[in-house]
Image (cartoon, rainbow, N blue to C red; front, side):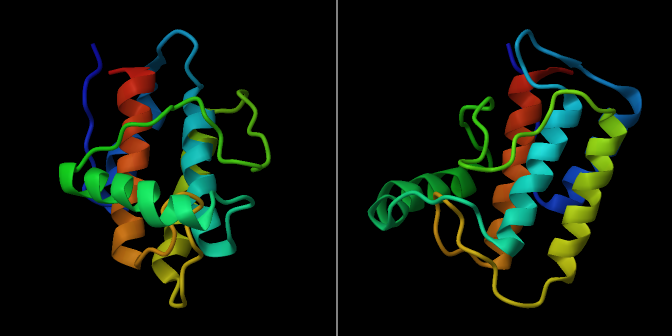
Length: 151
């Protein structure tokens, strides 16, 4: 049974994830390493600033994507396939120290918070505000950690 982790923001996620990166947590069988998981989270945040490499159709983003976004935000939790990479994103290796992944995530969050312009459309949810991106990225990280690791 998974232990449900929740984060209300990227700031909270960073504070709590740093402890995991320092102390180490054990991945469940077949799950990604903590390095890959944190790098994947960072990659998603980076794409919110630079643009995702591939997108679902406008119809999907306007219907199923928006519905999923609103459900996740209302529940305060996300559920998705945690082994699915971001479509057409550069592959992330399994190898790497957890703290390297955490430092990439920390840098991505800092860039996110200092970004003053528009954010790029999410590949599945479409246009998001900074507040929506903050919350959904935090939920994304929490989902990976809850389902992928023994805490």
